[in-house]
Image 1 (cartoon, one colour):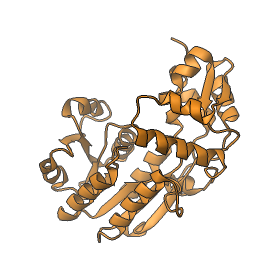
Image 2 (cartoon, helix red, strand yellow; image 1 turned 30 degrees about the vertical axis):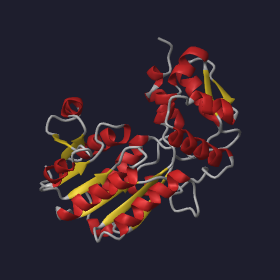
Image 3 (cartoon, helix red, strand yellow; image 1 turned 180 degrees about the horizontal axis):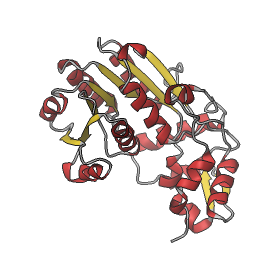
Image 4 (cartoon, one colour; image 1 turned 180 degrees about the vertical axis):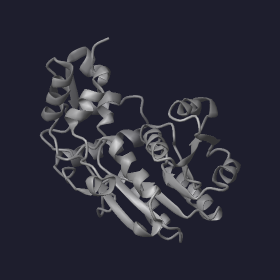
Length: 293
């Protein structure tokens, strides 16, 4: 087993848990940063050797022990209004601990000017990391395929439909497993090979809502339709979410609808050493999420 310690922040989330899995599959020593040790215990099912450590942003004193002895960091911050401030805390803690490399999860299009609000938040964090003096790598993935299993599953199960305000816009959706494979490859490689690089991570093709629905329908053996939502209906569907979050997601969807999220790159294949996963592969592997109960 590699003696370097790799800290994964946000380790219980969709991306973080897959990064933990990918790293342990490579024999890495993983320290999982979690908000709750009790909830983080499920990571032990991935690998019982995973070290659990509390990271509580309301208690900054938890950062020092979390980063002590750490060699590399996969830096993921929660989707909150103060995410820039939280990322700065983590970067400062990494620097104070003498971390050798930080791999930051950002977002596709974060380097666009002037960009959307989500991109501007990510770019502000990127700049802070770039100026920190740490060896760093930026990962900019497109929208996650897993969001269909998380946010669209109920509509698919009950109504056989995906409801999104994307018109005929095409999106280069990426499977989170590919993000994790790239992160693990970089975090177990020579840091000098990737220092200062920003990689745009996408799936193998840009897909319309109709094509996503067709792939999921084929996996579950029933018709699944894509229904384009008007913006106001999309806002109504997000009732209960904070206004800043609703505004940010509406803006993100508008970018996709306008065709600005269709970029396809070969970075996943080059870095992970295998082709990026297709929407059909994702749908087959996650079919249980879409089958009516």
